[in-house]
Length: 401
Image 1 (cartoon, rainbow, N blue to C red):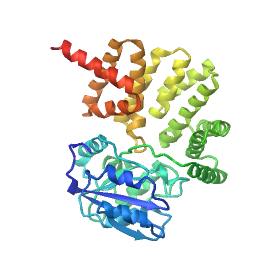
Image 2: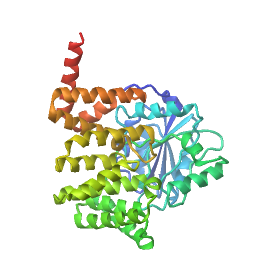
Image 3: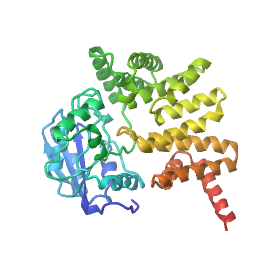
Image 4: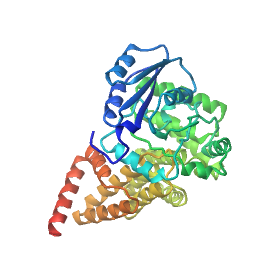
């Protein structure tokens, strides 16, 4: 792993909680081996010799504990073993890539002056899949522990936590939390089908929860069950229509659901002009992120409205920095919209691509964010575009002398 400008390894303890399976655990441990000098692996369940063996290979503190449906209780047991100033909780399905630590601690450095002490969950332990929790870093300290909040939306969760912490308002919590999502885990088919069953049980109890319709549609698309996905999208959009303020309360679900609606339109190749215009109007009037921006951009391209695509992506990137939600990963909020904008510019002219690169780089500098992580993402996902950008930048530097 490359060096980064963050806390030294002895100041960070990696914490992983393993439940029921140990797939990808070796990759996760290896990806943070140089980042953290100390690791804690909590094995929740009957105990697994493979998990214990992997933990010993990395000199991790192995702790075998009884299974607990409240994952926060397991994570708090890991926190009890942490003696360093920082604890990094990594999902077992995730890995840190080369530049992820720099991104992670860049956010932490910006907030450190506020006295970061604890982080907040977005989705409670009764959610259909715990995979929706995000990687998080926590500043440790006396009396600091991590706990789930069993409430239907982020607004209620923040309010309850504010009362527990004796703070005046949820905004004070949001200003003192450091949460970064890293990576998109891959699921096995049995996990996806199990998730479908649990989501449907939740919807049988409460069909007005838009996030469940989003999760149902998302999982159905992963399984390529398009009719099921289309029906879930329609039901979720009906909930949004009946609940005007839901875009502010659950932006993840709303952005994702409308983005999936754009995907189903693209797949059907049916693009009513009024529907496209309505989607664009909705986008401009809500806190929209990359989950909505990228599929909307592809839809706009399909109907010949290329002039609006780049601006849609740029506004999503601006939202990522100015109104960043804890659920929003770097890939969804930043990398994907920038990649799409540059793909479009590349299809026009080299000069247009260079102009777009300069504009994005100028914006990133204003937020103290480097271009390198985006370039690495493009290298991993679009090699031809990466080499074209490399050539254009080299030519530009030669012209400057």
